[in-house]
Length: 284
Ligand SMILES: Nc1ncnc2c1ncn2[C@@H]1O[C@H](COP(=O)(O)OP(=O)(O)O)[C@@H](O)[C@H]1O
Ligand SMILES: [Mg+2]
Image (cartoon, rainbow, N blue to C red; front, side, top):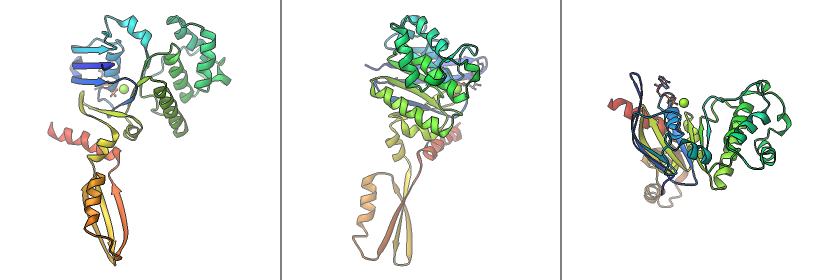
């Protein structure tokens, strides 16, 4: 049974239709990437999932609960990290995280706080007010607030936007570790290259889901160019991006000693997603 099920979801803000009929489901225990350019509707979709906005049409079930009607039962089971950190700037990191812990009646709160401060590498600065923190550190405090009550699912809205490459890599290590503990992670990003780090990728554009697939299958939608150098001749052929297509292509050369070099040039996941997004644009 899927942990998230969405059917016919629509949301409009005045004249802007942010979600235009989204159907989607998520299975337990994996990293789902919600990928799309700015304005695609990612934040709106995540807010609808956590019950912080009311859709105009469609149905949403998260753990078979309705995010609006069963809001409090659902909030116990999920952790939500909004796109812009909602922290108390004058309070310390520890106090901010404790606030969320108490709201969820977290048992053995002090022990949990120590664990989570270690996990997010905030222990050294735990008692400093959050307004003295860098953007990346605030993101970590925000992540810790979402994690303090041991949720079964994490919904993270652009957790790595505007963070430095080191912290970005470290964040993905965190996400993997949490998925390894059986958590389901739903992570939005406008950074197409991050799609490769997910188990499954949902591509949203202009409020519609245009593809849901594994990064490997999305890569196969691209083309591979095979460059074979035979003597002084270089020949470039475009083939499908599957191992079988490559084998078939190379069979024609046998093992001729003339073949001096074979190189592969593959479309990147980023360029394939961008061309999917742009292709849909042309149809409109
Ligand atoms: N509170 C709001 N009022 C009016 N328009 C909004 C509001 N929030 C989002 N929008 C619009 O809805 C669309 C989707 O926004 P959003 O869900 O924030 O996209 P994303 O998170 O993918 O950047 C955009 O056109 C945005 O300008
Ligand atoms: Mg957003």
